[in-house]
Image 1 (cartoon, rainbow, N blue to C red):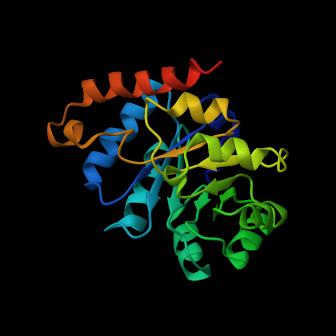
Image 2 (image 1 turned 120 degrees about the horizontal axis):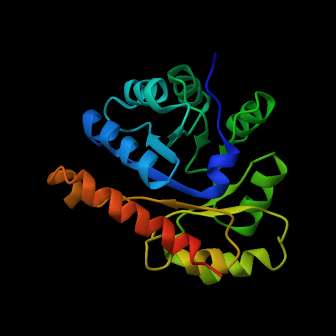
Image 3 (image 1 turned 135 degrees about the vertical axis):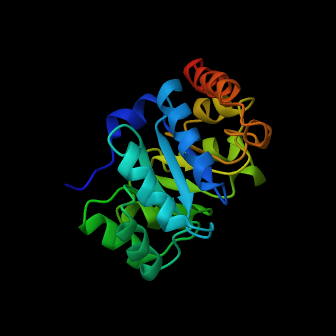
Length: 213
């Protein structure tokens, strides 16, 4: 039976951790650290080496406890590769109508990338579960707040430049979730195979979100 996305797990920790070109065995260790620390959602970018194999392996081993998805999905061919690997959710860097509509029709959570108010609104109208505002590093939390002035019913997932230091600012600005790259799993932990240190770091990252008023 296909393992599906858990909104319950995501809502407790609405943080999409983005992984690009990590060692396959390290990814499994990271997944174990996620399970222990309370984070739940891992995105493997399709332009990573061994992406589809890594997604399949992670879903098989952790798909009942974690959300394992595919990122950098740019067209329908990418989408079929991701879903064929078992991806439980889809993230795109751009707004591709065909990808969004296929996901909506097949009840696959999709977080398409958009930046301008027009793109954000179009992605939402097409049925996006959340709209990934990318790159959010360019304008920061204030841009999320500005977007939500007129577009207050849209769920936004700012991605790019999010860290432990500013995550609460994004949620205070109205974000429904965030996408986080290297800040969530700094390279030093991977290089040193410091899995206990990573668990502590991830717990602190989650606490930074939970401390948002």
